[in-house]
Image (cartoon, rainbow, N blue to C red):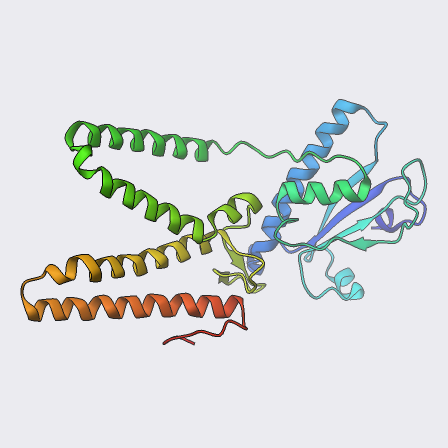
Length: 283
């Protein structure tokens, strides 16, 4: 540790303070550790390609099990933390070489975001080394093949001219549901799929209207779809039921489903925006 906090050093040190042991159940710690390893591997590759003339940066990790006493002395009561100890001498010294903390958020928890933040701090480009996700490519390829085969079967066995209007209507509704649920925001900002509390509990909704998790897009889109299905059924299909008792019962069920779904959406909006004025059944 003395090499990290030394007052005279010509290298910078980036340290994560973490708890990776399974007994701590720290999901964010594992996520940040994966991100830091990606950035450090990328930096090492850059140095191997470009020689030794650039910044001297050392990546390190201190686990609570190895530094519990130090954590106590530093007053660290929440993790993960990300500390930077800049160089105080040499060609790449900082004017202010005092230790500083890099705030961890949704963006800096991703390899690209952390690399960008460190690049701004050190005024040098960081290129994270992100392993290829072959399973993702394989899954996407299988989905594309299945979709193409389904389209082929539809083309060969269904009269598209007669069903064309309905197909376009369904496609339009699905597109509107997807876009209104925040899909493009998630694609652009690439947030984590789910959040997690410090105790390890899963969080489905980010508690602010400026942020969302990937799973929110799916939940909101599905709830919108239920509301749309109920309305379409009440307008187009329920009136065609000949039996009065059956028609009344089906109408009642669809109305209840619509009210519950819409109430759930309102409760989500109120959770993300406490000033949202509308609610129905749910708080």
